[in-house]
Image (tube, rainbow, N blue to C red; front, side):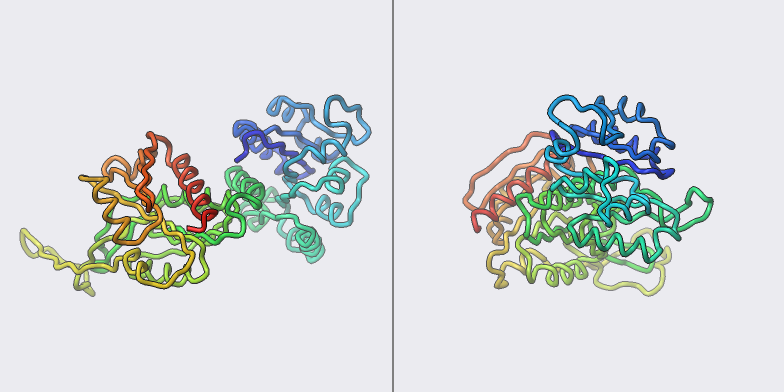
Length: 398
């Protein structure tokens, strides 16, 4: 997503400026070309030499400075930018941008560029929550800027409240979302399920599986990066949700089916990556089951087949992608599932090798029977390829 992108990083004068050095470094590592603009106040917190060393690019501080190369002044820099990121965006800088002052390089850059703008406010809680700051942010939003809300926690003053600069991974994800607004899935509504379900046996025990949710979360993230409006319906997992997706938490197969049925009413695609338990205890004890002997017999009942039940519903235009995690006869079982559940694409993978791991080796099978084998790769890369195939299916009007 960031490979080859030109990111103009505006650093204004807040204590959080030192954290932005890590952001600049991570952007460069992701393949972006980073041009840093520092306000006069920012240079009181961090030296321009820090950013120059990290980006291997000259740091811009003065609108009247000499310019060499293709960026002939702020106009050239503005024209060549793919995105303008202002972090930290202080109350002072937010006010100046909202008013339209151009007496420094960052202000001139903001007025000149037609690239998307991401603002990352960071300041004391009182300043952030003040009506003036909030009105200025609303003004900038109305002009098309995206605002990444500050985090809550301990502030430089020692107080606790809202105003901390978000962590680098969250800012990186926000940049990817902004850049992807006009991607191949722009305007599409995609529903992704992820993680395993937990079927209660008593108040403290459940029947479940080892699904980590990594693949479903990666697909949700890549779909959002491609511009989609993503709803992620997730069973219990231990990973944070991707930035910018609508997260719906569920626990059981029944609650996941209810959430899916509600979400797909106006959706363009459903990617069913969750590992839904096939069976649940027929009876749930109201009290913790005590040890009473050497064995315990539990009667199980069939859980709803979410994709199977959707096969008979009238959902015109909905692209459906399912997963087949098998321990034997992988391709045979995957093809049977593809046909039985009326899917457009099924992702087949070895359950033992894939569940809980960082990598996967997948086989994609389309409705027409064509097959594509993917070599072992990180799940994030697999997710990107699956989203590319989804975009192709949507373009084809499948």
